[in-house]
Image (tube, rainbow over all chains, first blue to last red; front, side, top):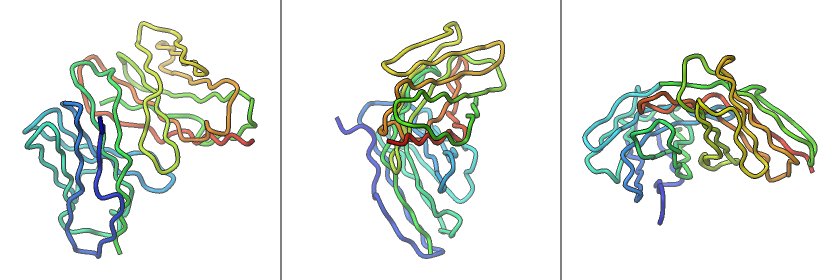
Length: 114
Length: 111
């Protein structure tokens, strides 16, 4: 049972490049989300999804797109990378139905934009 | 969405001492959860306490909830160097909603 898998683990981009961060879970969780964490800071919610075909914005959605075509996958797209998007990105998932459900986190993608 | 805010921002203690950190929230909640983040890793769920509970234990962890003060505390007893991490709280309502975390408490346990 792999849990939440994020790829790649590390990535360096140039300003203006685009890329997709992958997130997959094998727990049949309805809820998936993306966070970014800047050095010494807490997590900020970028986008989230409560099921396949449904996505919504979090606290800091600008510059990022998401889609949820399957229950398992929730990719995060950077359309035109900017240095301000240098951060560690975490994907998380859980069941829904009761707000008191533990989130499962991946180990993160460390993204540097030059 | 619901969010908690942790206090203090940073805490440094000697190994064997107890560590207490607090979480405050603003609206009525159904439950409150605590998570731990070791350096460079994703968050790990520690414990959940529901609004009709006042105290909950899990190993060396003790969580209290005071709904009249809209606050919770996490106590780690007999701390170990391995407890060095950041600790976050998040609160939930009666229906499922986006999960937002506070800035966290950074705990350093000195051997």
